[in-house]
Length: 96
Length: 485
Image (cartoon, rainbow over all chains, first blue to last red; front, side, top):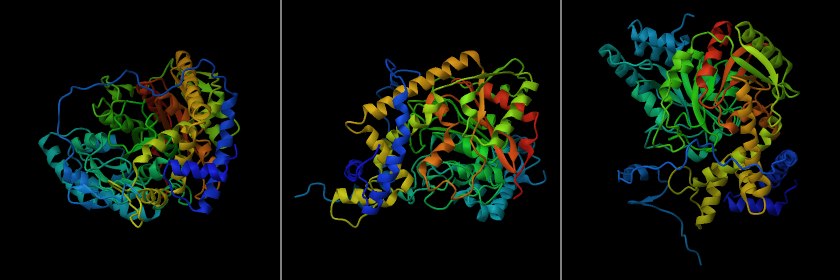
């Protein structure tokens, strides 16, 4: 399964990972090679087989709807790469 | 055995309880051992000497008051993807290099409540992706049995620390074999519990339907003790099993007469080294000698497990690692004008090559137009893998296979081609796909390098695994052997 450069760039944009041209070329080759390994799954007859989404032994797990303290604000902010008072500082979200 | 740091956990606990040994002495011995060998082994990302000494003193007070449990005062290491409040937790990634959690993982809490002593955080493949610990963004860990070789991965740090005598025991995590394979390569015991037995709260998530935390120890008794401490329902993990935990020590009887063992032929094929096959052949003879009934069987879906895993795990990881955006914590690339660029550059520079490969693979497999052919198909194959195990466990109490296709390989030997590295996991991946418990125990050496035997059982079959493993261990010398470090 050969991936094109455009496809790899598209995927990289979807998962928001920046890439140099060199990295793009290298990843294109590596991902194509890895995807080849998956061709073996085409041989498997999965007609009528339900997918396994999870291994849960039980259904939806619920708890009482009773309020409890959240994480302390200072703690939550303590790892902030960029902070302004009680707020996480980010780049402009809306662009021209 | 002459050094305190060589003690298995159960012997240390016995001496501590009988006040023949203090937690301070034992901790000091481990800290000295770390001083002695760590520059060669490099099992630790972060060492917590002062904290360890404080915890040891408190443990001694508890022991003196008669308020101790079997883990009180015992020095251990936690893999660096387990949150430890106030202590850097990096997942061996630049992305989390500055990250200090504000809470303890449930397993951290459970060990801490018992008064276990934390020596530090264990080196790993970045975000638990890898089979050699060479994907650590910081430095590789070296196998104590042969320093130019890998300890396995992704729990290479914990495995090496336990094998080298730096820690009496450790906790690792296992998504596709990351406890069992390094345990095999380092000659120790590693258990991946049934999915849901041990709470994942506070484990930095890689693949949520596959990840499990488990013990890495010097022998099977130690494994049972540690499992006892960490297993059990946790309301903070909605995938945790709400059933009471048995007393795992009761499984250590030594009697395996009549237990039915299946030998799935797909695990003994071309990709397995001759020396490994030979060790397993001998080990199976020992099990027969102890009264187990052995029969060959076939699990055809084994051939598809690797491809299946390398679609499902990256897909789940692409979702779990989407949170690393440089906004609330972790590495953040600030020198840009726009939000998207900041995010893209953060992830470009924060993640290593293997992590990026897997996120891209997963994003592709889940994307529009490819979801059916890849992710959905893999989920169906996963059902087949699970069903095959279910059928097998109607005939057998456990299945016996090699843990790793090879003994420890050289640093740099498999880093050229990602697929070569992925093949290290062919024997371990199926257990994660099916959510069943699996243990690796030492079963010999090939040219001085340890070989591991894997036992797999049905869900919540840990007692069967421990019973078999213990009986085998007690009939063989491997658990007393130490690397010449």
